[in-house]
Length: 172
Image 1: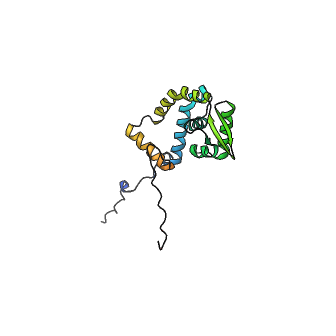
Image 2 (image 1 turned 90 degrees about the vertical axis):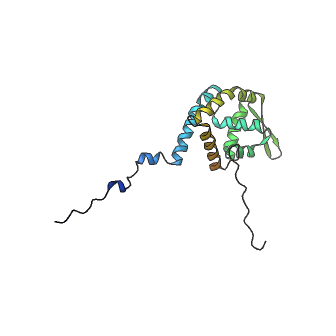
Image 3 (image 1 turned 60 degrees about the vertical axis):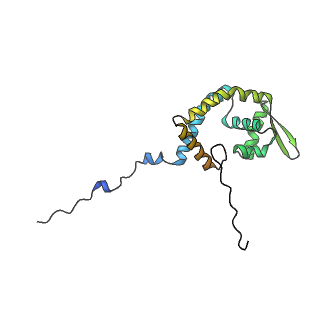
């Protein structure tokens, strides 16, 4: 009597991953969800100060770099020229910042009311930053910020991009 052929072992065959776990593992999906979390965390400031996250970052950048050129401001905060102009116009209408012509450039200055607003929202903003990175440990938070900075090519307290080497020219 012949023995039955051995059955394949099911533990040797990798199981198909759960499609939902695959979705939850996609960087784009996770980044979108993280943005939702940050927007939700910022909502109290948005309501109290009538300020969007983009308006806040523009206001803060102008406070840090008084007299910044409007085009450079867009580069600093990661906005295109058109969006930067719209945000600056809204903040200017509210008297938070002002613009002045400097040849062909538009220089942007923070106004006293803008400085007062930044000072008033600082305590809440510190709490929000902590809420966003909860439940990470201090070490994980630092690593997370370093990796985000690296991914975006942003030099900051957590990441300094390496200087790019120029390709060697033959014969030199």
